[in-house]
Amino acid sequence: MGGRRHRVQLFLFLAALAVPCVVLIGLGVRIVKDNRGLRTLERRRHAAEQTAGKLLEALESIASTEIRTDLEPGQRYRHSEVAFIGWVEEDGLALPWEPERDRAAGESRRLFSLPGFAAAIHACDQAKSGHASLSSLNACYERASAAAEHPAQAAYARWLWANDLSEAGRTRQAEDLFSSLLGVDPEITDEGVPLRLLAAQWLARTETQRRAAAASAEAAIAARPWLPLMAAYVANNIAEQLARGAKTADETAAAQNLGKRAAAHSRLLLQADELQNDFPRILPLLRSRPGHRWAGYGEDLWLVGTAGNGGPAAPVFVVRGQDVLQKLAIPGALRLAGAEDPQGERLGESLPGLKVVLADDRLEAARDFQRSVLYFALLLVMAATAFGAYLLWRDLRREMRLSELRAQFVSSVSHELKTPLTAIRMFAETLQMGRCADPDTQAEYLGTIVNESERLSRLVDGVLQFSKAEQGKRTYRFRPMQAADAVTAAARAMEYPLSQHGFRLRIDLQDGLPPISGDRDAVEQAVLNLLSNAMKYSGDARDVELALAGENGEVTVRVTDHGIGIAPEEQSRIFEKFYRAPSPENQLIPGAGLGLALVAQIVKAHGGRVEVESAPGKGSAFSLHFPAL
Image (cartoon, rainbow, N blue to C red):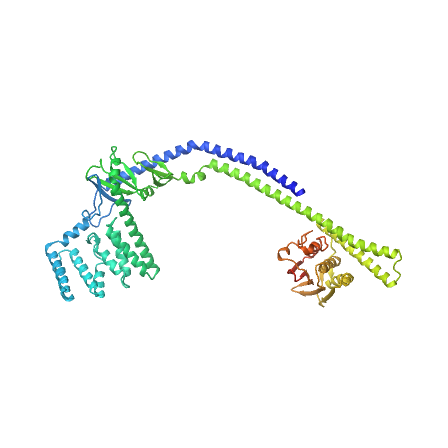
């Protein structure tokens, strides 16, 4: 009944605190949202306008300095943010790396087709198709090299001869020729693929030239901002071969770096092909108003713009939007986003379909001081409520537990008092009525009365001593003493009860032990409690050992029984007041739950400690450790 009342009180307390907290949180959130709505909108709009202005200024600067629609051999764009520059062709987009528009590829084709060199290469092709010997082919390619008027022609002749040697199984000679091509100009190409990249692809399979091939491929890729599709495929193939043959961490890192570069070129080419297909739809948007307009496109978010009104042959600038934004380092601007992105603020008509995601979209809670303070206050209120509820619940649980233990204690003490009183009354009445005339029997009855009286006195004294200890009123008379005296007295006091129940008490007292500083009566009481417990909880066993020994500067009293034992999870609680292990065997054994609590108090007051070793069904051993003088 009391537990139910406590639970109802706890529920009412929580309800009384929770309802105001919920209302306060709701009102606080509503107030914060209402107060910051206009400020947030204005702040975002201003940041978006600032970002749009700086972004347009940067894009106009790029467009004015990168007016070229093609690169001379060996050139790169002035701005690293530029992905590529094409041009308008019949309302479509012309890409700079298409074979017919790649200046480097066109120059290589022109040099290779010059009459004298072309005739020499043609003669080598005829000799090869006629199954000429390798020596004849070697002589033919030497004549072709002699006819070369440009380094590109000589490199091309070595490339063709190296391939023929490889097909003929002359790998050592082929490797030497391929190695000589690793340092040629990356603008020397075969159908748009640099010869040094093709040579690196063959050498990436070898053991000796793997590092050189990786370095040459890196240089070839870095020479221009883009590669033709076939060249990107060759670079990716080289990276895969290097990764398969890597034996060191450096080789693995080189392969991974090359693979990333090749993948970046491949992504650029694939997205550029998509842009080329969609360009007829984008071009009217760029022409819709005077001045430059920039449209967003693709997963990597390119900014696409044209010069002038986007007429025929007008340059088409393709710029990496996020790179431009990072270079500008606009405060609060995190990234650019397309129109389909749920986050961000629109950047205006000059940048149609583009948004900027601002720092406020992600960090607004950290930057809004008022909201943070309010939420912190609400959190404190909720934490205080939860903590108060926890304290109340803990106190209620402790109170209910103490109430149960007290009730159990009263019941147990009543039973403990009733048993000796019943025995005393029964034997006293028998003697009073003169029903026992035998002197020996009378002496036995009187002995029982005396022992039961002593038992009753010990029980009452134990309760009183525990009460004094709980109130801090118990005093000890510490003086040097021999622990053996207290142990012997306790054994003598328990001799009759033990013998009455058929117990055998084995005593082992070590001689020559140092004295301890203690209260003899208290130490004797602690040993009596342990012996009494051993007798109660021995079950069917009838052997109890009492030992006294000294080691490591301590004097140890050890009481061992072979009874029902104590479960491991209960051993940490058996020294609590009123606590009794809730096992079926314990329910049948009388007790108040104070004996071990009193033992623990006495030993602690003597500066010692009490230990227990026990297992269910195997008995228990309690050790009292007192510091020796």
